Image (tube, rainbow, N blue to C red; front, top):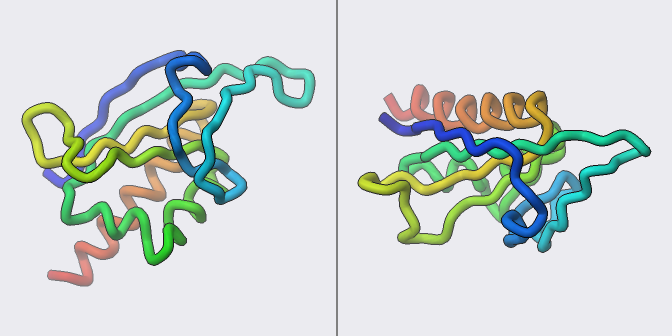
Length: 122
């Protein structure tokens, strides 16, 4: 399998303060703001495992793919460092944070990148 999915609901700002790709396309430390446009918006987090050999497809040259996915979905996306795998696998951790709609869209865009490239390789 080239991906797996784990759900971690309600991430707080203190626990999610790592380098990640924000919707503006920059890799920056992110402080979670629960209030946006005077509306409280719940932020959830999902971690999917992506096979190490496919992580380049998700990132893209110069981070182009991951920035585009973040901008289109509105989710924040963090990819684990080299050698940091899902327990018992060689899958890299891809953590997607934001509202459920943004998470689902980002997850679908990531899986689409991998599956379309896998089809070309067949």
